[in-house]
Image (cartoon, rainbow, N blue to C red; front, side, top):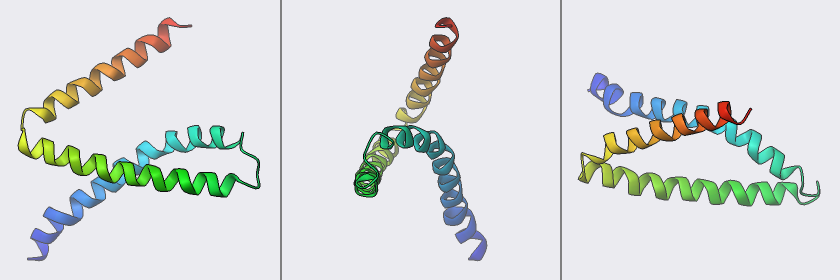
Length: 98
């Protein structure tokens, strides 16, 4: 029972958390640069509201996405290919704009 719980729940949850933390690092830099334009007095409210909205959107999009991937098995490799193509385009744009 404990091994099954670990393999089916804890490992995926840890992988999701690790992936999310990794992806949030660049978001923190982008959000910090935008928030620096807000007067310091209002910054906690603006950041708090933004974080709540982002968390709500992340939950909704994740639930919809996981349901779609579960229902349509072909969607996962297609989504992966789209992400790879986006990465290639970003790298190409970065290196050709210099």
